Image (cartoon, rainbow, N blue to C red; front, side, top):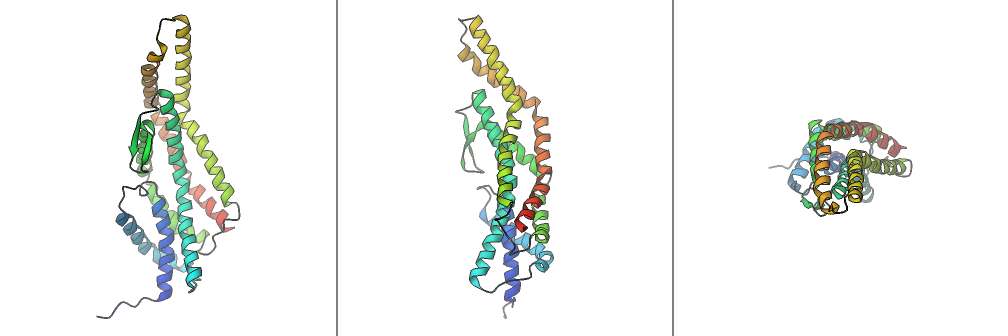
Length: 260
């Protein structure tokens, strides 16, 4: 049987497309979990690359046969996909940061669980908010957004035009600083109520010295925090949905800065 003759240039173009798609796939918050088998990640990246190859191959015009330049191009394309995924990852980090602050304030500082997605211990409230965010991400087809971004990114940033010397790094730093602001917004309602609860308990401690405020504060703070979380869950979903809706604009802004 004769082997399939694939032109070297066509195979190089496919590898370039695959490298950027693999970066996107590896950076999607749902598929980046350590629980997701590596075979599934690889298979998904290859299938998406095969589907997108006829569309994206015209944008890959110059392919060098030099192993050194070709390897650098592959690494740059993979890094580009990871940078795009970092924008979505910052939203999940902001949710986790805000939930961690809530957990410490409500008395769950020692209540940690193992997060299989990141393979580390996280606060109990952080795990709940993280799962809630993942469900919203899947409900609005956020994973489809990455596939569309992978296809449209070649129009704004063809392979070989990757440039980190412009406004890309300051823009990423701005998004990272926005992560802390977003975390405070997520935790603000609960923290405000817990602050009022601590104020009331402090007044009770002064009025009734015999009252053991330290033991009373644990059930009061935990119960109050859970009630506020339940009441503000719809508000939290709106805020998270707004951040996910802003992802396309942020992704293409980053691509624009990388192309300059």
